[in-house]
Length: 156
Image 1 (cartoon, rainbow, N blue to C red):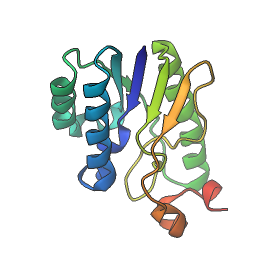
Image 2: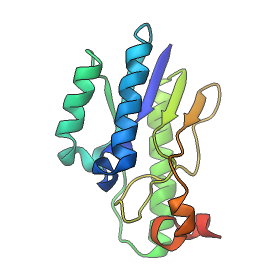
Image 3: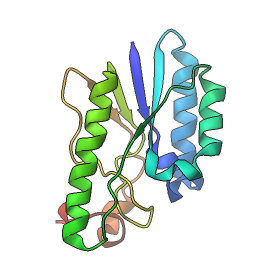
């Protein structure tokens, strides 16, 4: 089985907080107990310059270290452009995911996007079946403080 684990939250400011540490620990354990499967790890090219340690960790947990990168468009940060940016980012990310055609796609954190954690594709639209999709929800703090953590679309 081909399993794609999205570790974008390990690249943003969340990498040193609970979500980043927990996500990497979960990925390590999934790989440890599922050695018979092929693993790939999805990263955001936008944060590649900050990801050397993460890529080293991936190489330690999976000998092949299959790192798949997706792109994130660069635009200004006004609200309309931000919405378009996230829409384009979702299309680019989903296209990349469908190109590698995993059997399973796991999202390490459902709360990303352009928040205090930086520019990262929010998970508005998931890849279409037949890909099995799963996600980890660590806490509801973003729902308690939507202005700080979530886009207006989710805050409503």
